[in-house]
Length: 111
Figure 1: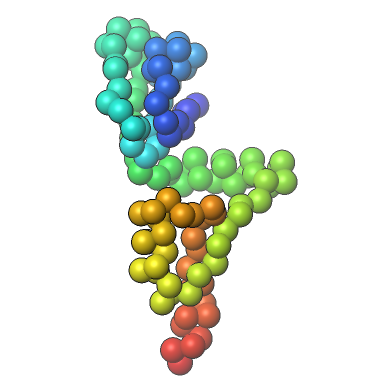
Figure 2: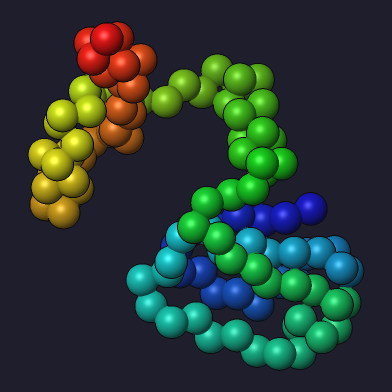
């Protein structure tokens, strides 16, 4: 079992609930450096890893969980020529939803 975390949390309580040979996966970068004591890792041979995105298995588990519980994403669909504006909005924290680029319409328009 892997736990996916995105923000700053005390690590020891999380490591305490991981089974031996378990993994803690950090997704995205925390705001502050983490304090990581070695003994909880060594006892039980636990691992900590990181990724800017989850792997295929974790992504599929998230999609399955969302489908089972009726969780749907809220997105803002944008054309490809809006990408620079979208990046500016990201920098200003002026984004309520995830941006999704409508590649299909972009491709149809160029042919």
